[in-house]
Image (cartoon, rainbow over all chains, first blue to last red; front, side, top):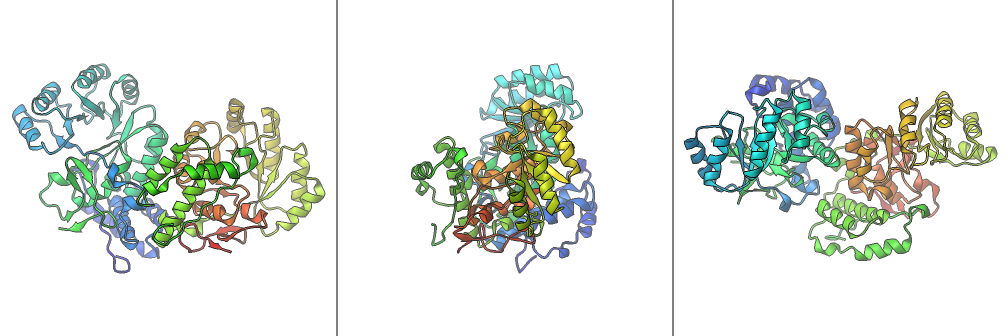
Length: 304
Length: 304
């Protein structure tokens, strides 16, 4: 809260990232924002927040999002507008189809008919069956996310060639993040872009991955929030890398925040708020498959 | 002009950059901003302006600066504040001492006593005399600008070792910009940072120069303005490069605009407005040698 305006933030906590409600509350207790007289001092404030402790990236994102929301409200502008972006340029968002048996996959794909792009998880041993099942229902473009599920680079390349024939747009994190040399070889030889997800966390990773991946999947809960995510996009563009923006399973708060940056990216997977029943906010909508920004100030949400 | 607010911009035109009053006016005549309904659409507008014609970087900077000034006024905030920067973190600015005989250099150095850093031009054949003369008057830190004046990399390195002993902070553009391999060798072996100036123009140069120079000298009249300059700083930082911000001989308009970014840089050489007698504006001041931002909206100027 500042001069009667309230900024909202969110930390979403997939168990595998090592943060919990307790760790976030513990971290936030250490954050002493009273020492800053002005919420506009983002560089100083967020550098301080980052320096309090290692990790805690979702907790840090929560502070970053709330500050951005507050600043947008103080100047009465949506963030995308303060950043000079055109809301017309938002991408489509994909809807994610998890690994399952053909009956379930078929049903989920049919339910997702309002989306114009799907993201299909592979790496569960039934890759061709998954794709064939989705393709039996729809011909929309597909993003593939392997979540480090393949181990052999040559087999991965063979599969990517087959995927290329099935109308796949790109492949996310095909090999384990530790197999850096294999990944560089795969990216060099692949007909499809290869995107880093699990391997990629913060801005220092971008330049490191220039010759290893074709692009990066940015998520606010990994990047510590909007400010670093925005910088990541600038750096990736300067290095001729593709950019995707994704999310965790989270409410319209964090999803709407990420959406403010989406006019800058190639691909979006911003469906986290559509996978939950307890969304506390109304914000950015998916209209005809496209991320659709409103003209509310800040991150663009209201309490629902 | 937009909704009663006016944004100011400036194109300054050193003869060696190939732009003239005629070329700027000719370029600006082609710029049809009426097609954009909203000055906040910086990404779209500046991409369009850049696409109108090759070169014309100062003319493009003039449009960019005016739009930024306008946006700052529309939301009633200085640009540094919209960018989340703390005005306390502005650097000192250097004052430039040109190549001349010892009497003149001594006089100019004495006149510059209110500056806490000097930039001394070398490469005129009297390098040691220049430095010795300045040092006979003052012990402040010195930046050295060779303007491509040395040709031999080994002699350059010997001179840099000597300069290091005289309290020099860095060396700008020691060799001709075409000698890329020599420059990379010099940077690797130099005890002082080597900064690109003539070699460096736009954002695509930053990544290219990662292993050739220690850092870059950004000038708005080369970068096409504030938006690309801001991105350049982000990219250079991600690549662990040093950043300097400089200017041409220009009024307080362009100098104040560049100063808005200065909390982000290592070094500033923002004395262009102090070298002229026909400054049309009042803006950012040098106080006790330091770039000092005011709290006026936009680029922070008023007509004088």
